[in-house]
Image 1: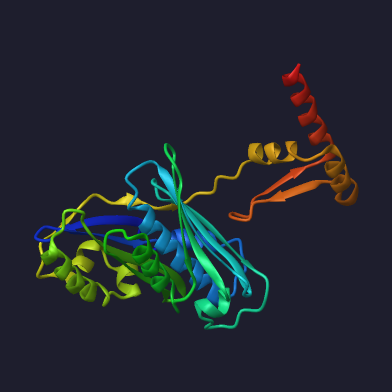
Image 2 (image 1 turned 135 degrees about the vertical axis):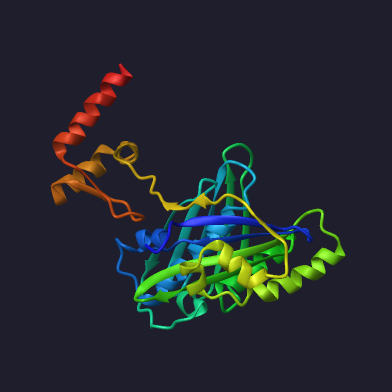
Length: 290
């Protein structure tokens, strides 16, 4: 990869506005590598990955954010999950033909976007917005308007540089202490940020990007945070799932296929259970119960 996947936070010293910049090419490749998605679906996954990572970076607590898009179109589900450590995973489900260059609406059809914020301590929050905009950015903007949060804008850039898929983006947000002057300057900063190109996010270092965009502003840049693909699947989780099935269901699968092959839809890992390994698990469970 051209550089390490990182999230950078920055602050405009003269204005009550903060920002984030992210470049996550390698994480994007890891999400795609075990799947054969149509090009338009790859692009949508990349956009959702960027959006989720930027939203996750706004968390003030340990927890995670899941952003999923559901609809009745040929792509009935796209989901990305990330946590405060910037560990990301995601998947799309495609049930019909997707034409190259398809728009968000053409892929999803009639649907909605669900953003679920789940702190490790405390109550879960969920926001839902209809898929009405032509782009994911418009849907995210609608979410912030509906939830009456601080003025926030996302800029998502997914593309191809030298034959390699790239994903990056930026976020600007007014701080809670902002006055009307800061809110006015926010619109100006949004116009500047909108000129960012995907190739710049992918190939330039963060200081170069910030200078190109905001050379007349005093910007404080904070230490970066690494972003990575991380799947939470494990053999133990599969064993727990098997334990919830009836013996009849397990035996039916074994008689039909000779084994139970559980594949993780996020990373493509396979966990295979034969009749003998399942018998061993049952024996262990019986010993624990007695």
